Image (tube, rainbow, N blue to C red; front, side, top):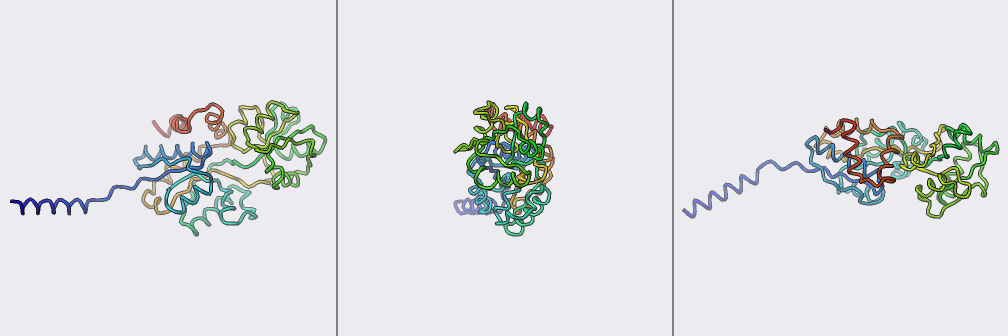
Length: 303
């Protein structure tokens, strides 16, 4: 009897050993920024809703940390920004990065060839450095674009820009000045050592020391809340930083439906909608996950 029981145990163990493996969960990650985390939460929630197991590893670090984790296979998917591929591939001088579609195509091609990383559908928005003017000033001076701004400043417009030292000294401001034919004197700038956009937006909104223009990122949540008008980079001076989910090719091969799941979500975003969503996190203090869930339900992505 003992021999029979032992044989049965061996048979059961062998049978257990050849059972189909469980599906691997998709590890969804993000950078530390609230926008990156919020978009990561939306994707994770959508995957769960479509029966794809997903693990939340959002807000694990800055760009180099998240990028390294993706290449090492420690995470499977996160939202990057198209223009950063110029840095990843030491290719920042290529003019393709200043066009959303060209930059997306180039980044997708380079990343797949080098790393077998697939770029999914990008959002039609950019989180690039930009200028935003107080709404009352913009309205009075008919400012919609950076070309308008350049003409205003060159014509003696009373601009006071608040920005970071990096923005003022690392070439971004000089590039805008060359492209849009204006020059700011030192007395027309308030340069903050830290230079967080929350501080620049707050100073412009309050008119601190005459400030009426702020250095911002295009999808900052504080822009609309502070009644600033984002100026369009109509001559494409700055690289486009469109949010785009990146996924390891091996994971997409296991779950090819992810591309179709993510596409309508990313297509639903605009610069304005991302500003509004970011404001709920950055200004109102809501969690990235709660804002993500609310948006998915409001847009019909989740019931």
